[in-house]
Image 1 (cartoon, rainbow, N blue to C red):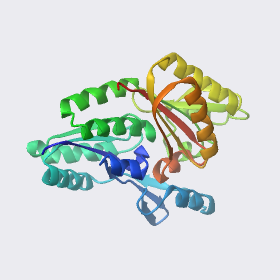
Image 2 (cartoon, rainbow, N blue to C red; image 1 turned 90 degrees about the vertical axis):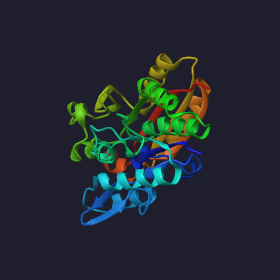
Image 3 (cartoon, rainbow, N blue to C red; image 1 turned 120 degrees about the horizontal axis):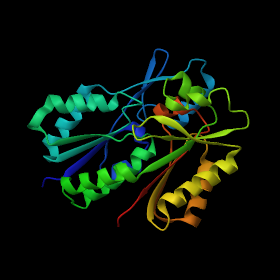
Length: 285
């Protein structure tokens, strides 16, 4: 029986067991330490990555999958399931991953029913969209209905994140419009987000973690008051803070689905340790 299959990349930071349960196909990016290359989440776990990050003198870099890698995944899914395929990826402002997937789509032409989507987001802000789409696919919803839901989530999903340092974003060239903050962070906690184009920008500057948390909660209240929510918190070596933030969210909002996950090696290479990212999308069920 034909069904819809959902593809994403490793920067969605979806926990492995959840991706397996929902039959989400995850295409890995790579992280490089000098001459050494590792597939994100395949041969380098988040724990191993941050340990290596702390011990290595070289700043890691990252690279996207090739169009051929995507083409192989799409052809395999088409052959084994004869499905419609929806492929959702990291913001094109942060990586060439979407472009690789798009080139693969153009190469395959009409031989495969395939939609390739620029999420304009990163980490589990992609994940909330991918997971909702995969749940609909498992429930037997047709591609058209899943695409309509994805397009709505692309409008309604918001993410805010806090970093301990802008060093990684700056050195890896992903700092975007937050560059104005460099050199001005003494006792200041920047709240960052992604704009409509999928580029990092400074949402607000506050003094200290506590005020940053309060400001994010106030913004979510304004955006989602009384709505049922899917909340995903991703972190890099900040599990305690992630769990505390989720506890607070649970007290204040109607959370129908929640995920706490590690920020993987590729996103971690750009934000560094101590990062906390909170993604929210309204749910319809």
